[in-house]
Length: 300
Image (spheres, rainbow, N blue to C red):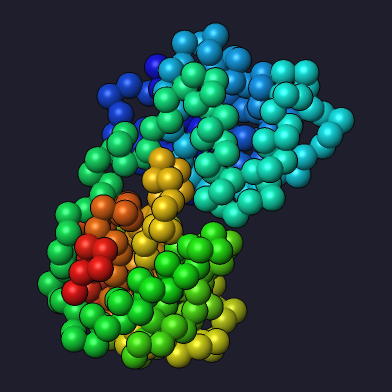
């Protein structure tokens, strides 16, 4: 039996939609997904939560969605969780990858097999190559190498998984707020043509909600903090990252924000970045004459 520890964002629901049977949906209190969870838990009750999963017959666990580091109330720690306190404390002092490695180790020590999201839903990893009508120019190849080196550097400090590159220079690096938040810093109304399929006018269901959110954001942010026009978004896993949790992800909203930031395209590492609703992402990028390049690591 599979348990999905679901955080916020669109990924948990996408996984459930792809599974032949509904998993046991679990959520940490304060970070509930869009779906109604079957079980909620506090980090202070982690030991009891894992014992409950065992009693329910759970043998596999998949973690998907965004979760912030919780504030721990020592007075709420129960007896079953007390032996785990040193490891939980260690996890909370690590970067994202270090923390997830410790949590994965705790799950495995309790007899669970930890499944990656892309093992549950293989189609979330797109094939390598250029998946849009337009492809990258020669300068974008240089930018991709620069972006790859930047993600390696960030990975050494266990920080971000994405950056914006233009003309071989790093414009912005992802921080704990994520890729979309990084792109929002670059967004402002620009002179891209308005057409059927324009990021602010799509009527398709897959992007309508995101379009409204972008319009609301743009209303209060009339100027770009940086000029990234003509650059790329580069996204890849951290070096030596455990791919069973926190594998990078892009989706329609990422594509919309990249368009509003004036970028020429998006480059993601082949086999290392999931794409939610690939068909919608391609429609968005094609409509704005942008590209999606699923690039092998180290590849030209």
